[in-house]
Image (cartoon, rainbow, N blue to C red):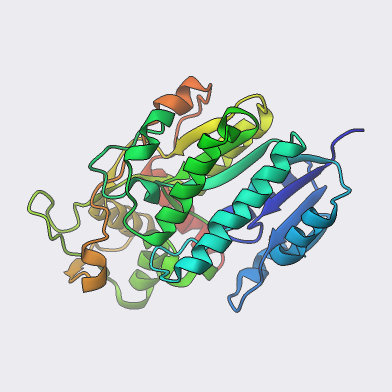
Length: 323
């Protein structure tokens, strides 16, 4: 029997919405969307999507355990709590670790290709590098429980051979782009900067507390959401590929660069101000992230990544269009 259904969890979230739109553009509407509608405006993303059915995550898991009678072509698992400041460890372990584990086991038993979201938060403070080689997994220590929940899943999947069979894990770095409005405090600094510039004409960035980094010169690997979708679709198109990969540009840029890109795209005069970082973040802050993309390139992914300046310009143009 032909495998028809494509399952997307976290489907009406930020990255999920962009992925489903890309699948729609390819002509795929045989999609089962899975998510959890909370008290945010995430539900508005439904308007952008064409799909076959929707299930709440709890109903979906019950269906998997009781017997899922659809033929499944692939699973994109993006559903998770992505808050780096979430302190409920039991919730994160159940929502990010156990949920993913059950779904990955089902996909493995039924030989269904599955692409899941890991995170650059698994790398901790970066002192041990950003290598996605299997042999490097044991040396990383995340700085927060969100990163730990993702890291434990990666280690479990590797230990049980899933990354050697049907599973692809993607360690997302700093993703930005359309349809993240509902994320509130966890939305990208580009989105926050856009609205702050509209409202008051300036942007605030955290001061640095390390002498090797000047204020605003902390470095992150910013990746436009369209590039993240392209990477996911590459593995969808190449189901014989599997493993754990970084999903970043490999080009770290400063927060100052980011703010300047937004000012330029908005055609506004640059005004960057530096503020104190909250005490609770100072020991859990990544001053530098940069994806090692060698493994991804060796897997055959050849597309160029969007520059920060071009990504900011595209995003600002989108935000202007919906005002």
